[in-house]
Picture 1 (cartoon, rainbow, N blue to C red):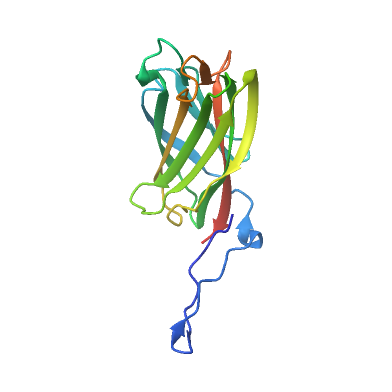
Picture 2: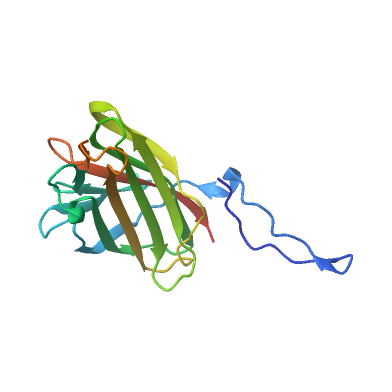
Amino acid sequence: MIFSTLSVLALVSASFAAPAPVTTDEYVRAPTGFNITSVGVIGTGCPPGTSYALVSDDNSALTAVFSQFYAFAGPGVGISDNRKACRLTLGVKVPEGYSFSVNTLEHAGFYQLDKGVTGSQGSYYYFQGEINEATARKAYEGPVLGKDYINKIDFEGAAFSPCGKDTVLNFGSDVRVNNANNKNGYGAIGTDSIQFRQTLHLSWKAC
């Protein structure tokens, strides 16, 4: 994945030069003073009291944990159970002189899919008042008898927080199961016996 920053524009042959790419050398160690100041939760996959969020000790990641986030499909299962979604609205304190983005998503849970049944998990994030939104999605295909999983996927696009300003991070996720190719097949994805966990790995830069 390539992140982009604004560069000084130069007029060359009657056209503007493209912005210079951001390299990993421009990223810095996560600063101190970063934390979550408020949490708002809404969605069919996160009833009140079933989710929470926390910051890692080294400020390099945010983790959201859900205890009732799952979707399933099969004979007799209502269509509303085929997809569940949740959005977290996180107020975050950002140290002066720093900005961050989310570069990868690590998610852990459980899925079980009969032959011809598919499942997927998608996520997105953006900062309040900003136009850039980053997305990620992972697909699964049956048959799978039942499996715990931990996957890490990159976000498409990059959204950086405003420089040195406290902000609101909106993070949304959904899980889906589709048995259209096997109407007699069952499938489920989401919470395992304990929890459904999503970890957002952060990249920091000085600004």
